[in-house]
View 1: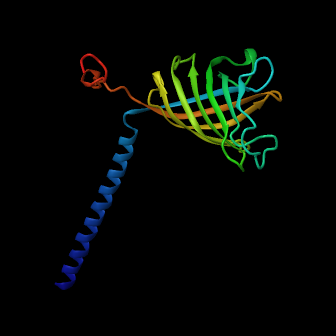
View 2: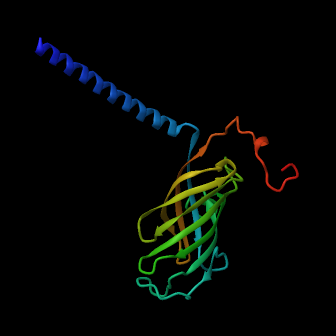
View 3: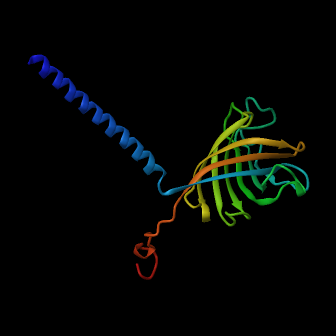
Length: 210
């Protein structure tokens, strides 16, 4: 009788553990599914043409030589900052080999006193394709001599409103001493439209109805 009762106790315990594990697994799957619900994936591959000299330059020095000399980059100083307005294309080529699809506008800043690191803050303005008129905001730390750098997608507007994700940032082509092409492999997601979202209930400060 004692053995039978012991076996029954073990069986009940095993069933209880199994139910807990099943419940935990179910919750994990539900959480993952809920995490994906309400967002749509966006994958873009863009090419940014950085031209630092010549008549068609797209980058200018804003701050240069003001800070202390950089420890590992001769001729550069901590805090050097460049403003860019780079052409963005659908391929790394020039001329007829690639099609303009936007501009990348923002700044690079040499933000480390000892490492070859710049902080990137740019807005990619798309002027062609399904996201024509939309923007994508990219920011992060770029170790310039790494083969692949990862930056963050921190926002967007238009069809990319509320975008979040990451960008794999690589040097795709060096055309000359003053013309370099960067590949932006964008992996992001955007919220799906909410049909129940009604701005009529939002109080706008400064409006006559406030």
